[in-house]
Image (tube, rainbow, N blue to C red):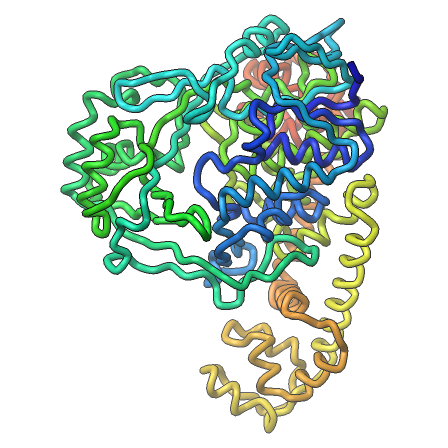
Length: 622
């Protein structure tokens, strides 16, 4: 059979981004999936983005990935979350048509040069001298290659739990893969178990939305991709309702048959997205919990009940939901369920996502202990890039923590590991003023262009965009406004008037004032923007953010630059930490286990103290 450069196993979000990246860089790619009809299947809620996750999708798009483009082409609602807070917290979120999303991903991949497909399972690796050479499939085929990316999601020894019923499966209605884990263990990998869950799906024709709070999309919806994707013209609302004490009492009747409480589920679930039974048990003083009712598509009556993830018996789930306002006459398409699956603790990975145990083997997605489409897609694109680079004898592509949320994600995984499903939050990023969703293209596209992934046209768009931003900022910092042309507007905005001329940028520092408001108050600013040409809302927002937060951005950049100095001090992989007696025993143990690539990474390992870092600095100096 044909030999490939890269074989990607699994066509979830991680696998799809990995295949696209490696193929677009020039590698011959084979994408193996159990079912070609379910590429990038939205197994859980039909949405992309959200708090911190939206920033990740923007970064993937800036790199030349597909997630942002597919999201824009299939979204049915857009909201910019956290608009009331500073721009570091703004996070785009889209509701998507589940079926169209998967179809669009398949179309994008089928249009990608160098990517072939094969529908099958992979039940073993071909490994020679600790180097991966290919894969073995359930149909008895052996495909040879130079590199393999495993992106198996929840399919490795997956077990689905609904009340007292348990059965094998990677998703409801799809079989699991039960041989690959044992093959990996034989090759020296450590495996553990995790758990996640999904809510019931309901018939929207049987819900009374008049009893719920309607949540419409933004009046002027934005996009995820920095490219020219379609404008969103037709939006579909989500709805908000709440559980109540009566529903909680019904749920409690099922605790005796709960796989979680009866001990049949051993894997740890996501702390920040607990099941509804876990919520009412842990937060027993709360009389209600929010439920977000989300449409599955434009042309379907199916709705997703976000916030009602459960593994209780199906009759208990249904009876409890009928006690919720708006659900009195609800009909159900399928119950919620929990799924338990194998994952491989990510301390077994290098920062490139290549495994330390087997050369040229990469892991991406839930196999590394993460949860979420966005986190998986981010790992996928990085694994695809680095698999291509590795087999072409090039240095790994790494984003550090001050360059992207993707850098934070991967550094957290390989440096700290995870014992529960890892989910990205803005609080995990110490440089979030630098890592805004609006400037992902500036941060990442030039780096990706240098790799050969982002196209020249993409990079040219970034250069032109920021040329316009810089020119606008220069104008706003040099142009004066006078009391007679601006004071009336200032009074309306509830801020003090001016007695003499002021620079436009100085007025913009006031929290009550936006650039768009100033344009209405000072006609000459509006005239400048109109005459300049091509200054759209995106450029206006970027210029305003840079002016308003200039001091904060500069201070955070100074801190980031200092930390980068530690990142620039390399540590050899074969460094013998046991010989350094001044290190604490815990530090030696953790350093040997993680094998940090730099002094900066060593400092982020739990159990390695600042004193230990000082010892290492002295030792390296010697």
